[in-house]
Length: 187
Image (cartoon, rainbow, N blue to C red):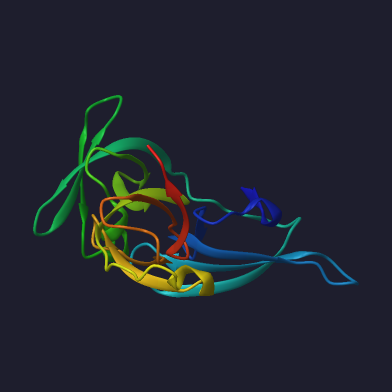
């Protein structure tokens, strides 16, 4: 059991006997009354979306999941392939079930896999990830005073708007929740 106030994005809850992954969470504290958590959940089995408002002190049933730190190996036509960093077990995750993760996965990097009843139900992408700029247009000197941006394509194919001074081959830090440029990374 988990209290409504302890639910975070990425939590797994059981509703109607099905596991749901919390995709959005917002707390609301009215002037009068009890604080509530407004959560939006996606069914892991069929993809349906469910919205609930739960008082922060009320308990709901959480799905018992396992978290495994796994290294992303490669992608074939149907699956992402991961290897558990401790047990060296191999996991195949369907691309069709997680198409939005493709642009954030980098070979050799480690990610948390959420496993429920032996099946991978989520790939947790870090909040910020470093990417290499693969394609970028050049800018004209003096254009930086306006705070203008340009689109670049990263090594994974993700398109991000960055300041004009970013060049091809440079590394940038990107917020993976909003796909926004954070800063240039000097390594």
